[in-house]
Image 1 (cartoon, rainbow, N blue to C red):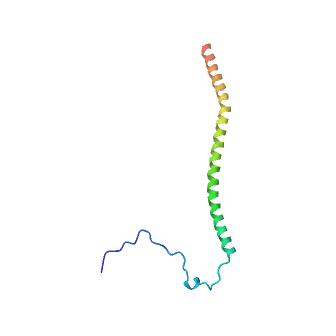
Image 2 (cartoon, helix red, strand yellow):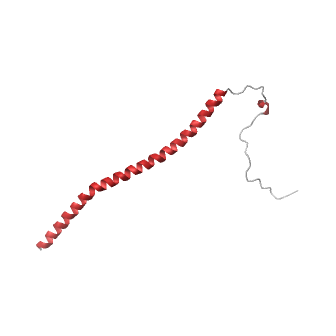
Image 3 (cartoon, rainbow, N blue to C red):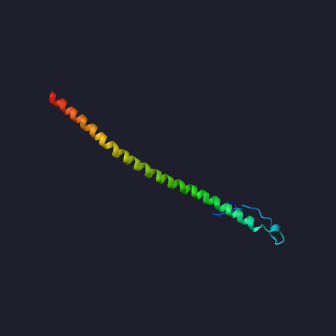
Length: 101
């Protein structure tokens, strides 16, 4: 006997469904095509919904970032002249106080 442990193959198929061979014969009643179709449609729609939700989230995030950046630039454009005017007033006031001394 071989005492070394056997290494299983890298990819081992997994049994996910038990099928009774007796149910595979032609005499058993087939699933109506409309039920198969409806089931397939529902499966596909579930996957589409999941993919759509993920993609929608990505697009929404990109649009939101773009809008926020535009808003930031717009606000900065509005604030900059006010800051410039305030700084000029403070500097002018400081100069006039220095010249009075």
